Image: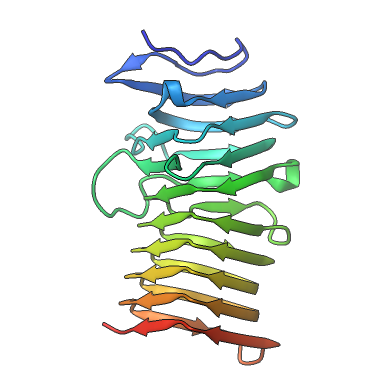
Length: 240
């Protein structure tokens, strides 16, 4: 029997089912999702409570079950404490809908309730697919993304920014919007492919270097008529 060892305060199921560790409920003490117990099947929403850190080890895969008829909304990983997810080369951390295909709303995504102290402590080598929005924030003033080697595929929105994003060696494929939002955007060595909109932004500043925007319905959609700076260097745009 494969078990996820957590405190009794963690209201969740943890048992072997088709070689998957069941993952749902509330997390009340510091908890680690281990590679040894991967893959995890998220069968309901998860809440990381204030003062608690959820750490996800490199190589862990979390499959999110499509919500059933008795659930009113898709499942969410809600963070009121802290989330640390930093993978490694060859061992990315993966969140994916537990179905095949290109659905963009199998689950809600990761929701950081920063108004209650929620924090995203690390975000490298992470793959997120099939979410309505990969990562969202309760407040629209503190979402600063510093991304390295991340992949966002078949989400309603890959990244929604309201302060700044620095993305290096990241891919955005088949999303409704690869990157959306406001303020400062710095992209290096990124690929944005087959999105409805690669970028749909209200920018203050844009810097793009060694990037590829391929086969998007809209490549760069600027929804602000005036902004402070734009630099595009050594980048390729390919139309459908």
